[in-house]
Length: 453
Image 1 (cartoon, rainbow, N blue to C red):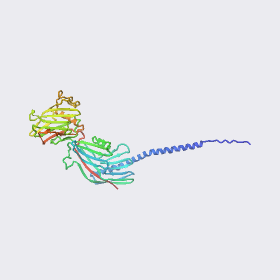
Image 2 (image 1 turned 60 degrees about the vertical axis):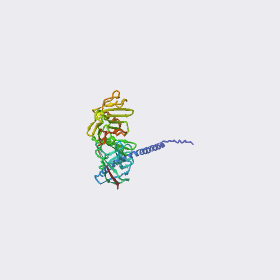
Image 3 (image 1 turned 90 degrees about the horizontal axis):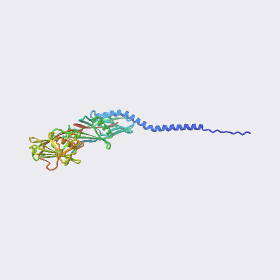
């Protein structure tokens, strides 16, 4: 019997094909999963952005109607809006705060307004659209906030008009569905400036500095708007999330009662001759006349202007010294001049360009090297001038303060303020000021309630 050998042929072709399909399916599943995981935040962000864009129209309408109510155009307004899963919050006390100060450098400083502005915010995840002081702001998950519609802040180079629009209550709503947003006037408008009951806070502004400080989550958008629309250069504080704007008002060039100290606010130190007028009209001057002015402090030797009766030039003879002592410099100039006498009034013009000053110190000068006019090195025993009196005073006034704001005091030392009657005396001071300048200011406080139904 013949034996038969059975050969079994082993093959893995079918198994390989099955495993291959399994691998492909796994790769597809993993790839799809990765795509879903990676793309979901992007899709979600796109969805949020699209939703915010759709809500912008309703929020812009709400902003306009709230402004109408706050400014008194209408007692109330209703705006309907679909929340679409977002949240609407109304805040009356938040970190956003507005402060307005009328100030100078003599310690006189009055805060005429300091309150929270409140705000209305609509948020979807990290996307926010907010209403603050009449403006609409957009805050994205990353990057700086942007302004959608401008706030109520108007400056034309001379007049600042600043209606304050505050939110007076708190409320909150969220989820899906349509809500009705009611905007109603909260309190009667209150005039902040000018104050008709005050003799200080009036228009036109004279010799004062206005400082406006706003703390806000949208301070960078505020700063950009103010700089682009008003040509004012604001100061943005990234640490405190604040924007600071200051305005300088020009002094009156008319004679005013001699009250010390004399305030100089925002003088334009970039100008070679910023002073236009500086004159004293002194009553009942006699032979003992001695008048000393000091800056920037009452007992300072940094800038000293000394005026004294000089009998050698007759009844109207005056000697004027202008001295500067700072950063190692010790410089002094002497001028012999005539005052103008009209009855009981003796007028001394510190900007008299027709009289000459001569250098009166053995120490060589160091502050005149880069002066635009009359530059050089002066010394009493050598090149001692002459330089016109007005230019000497202009030169040192510019050196006293880098900001252009300081005060001139009467000396508190004995026998340095005598020989005249201050009560019936006047002075006239006029100078060019650093922009932004301001002559008139209108500030009114408005408030509005916002509620949901």
